[in-house]
Image 1 (tube, one colour):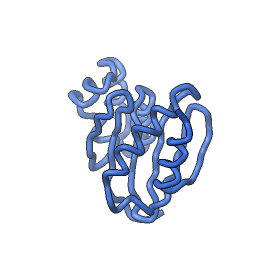
Image 2: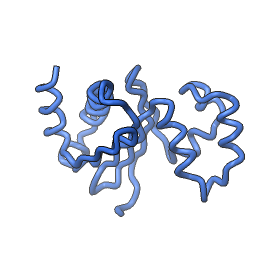
Image 3: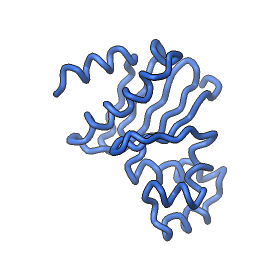
Length: 136
């Protein structure tokens, strides 16, 4: 795995995004968790987890409330979300909108993982944009 670059949480419903140092630390911040719709009881549960051992469970809490986790590894971009088939197009349009504004990402392979359906795909940004144009 390449070294980590920029990371983002993206809300595909609003197209709002937040640049993060680490996705888990951002979610553990009570105000951030509240803003994205993580309940107080769920946030309390997350705070009891081991931030090293349970890092994936903490990140998954953000994905479960509908956020998209994006991380650049310089040689690839990882995109993770959990969406039913009826919402995938909206999520991918939001991801494309964010990534298309970052010149460094134009030719970087994107690994897209839908944790709800189990589907994965590697695609470049241009191909993603073209595929979205063909789906209305």
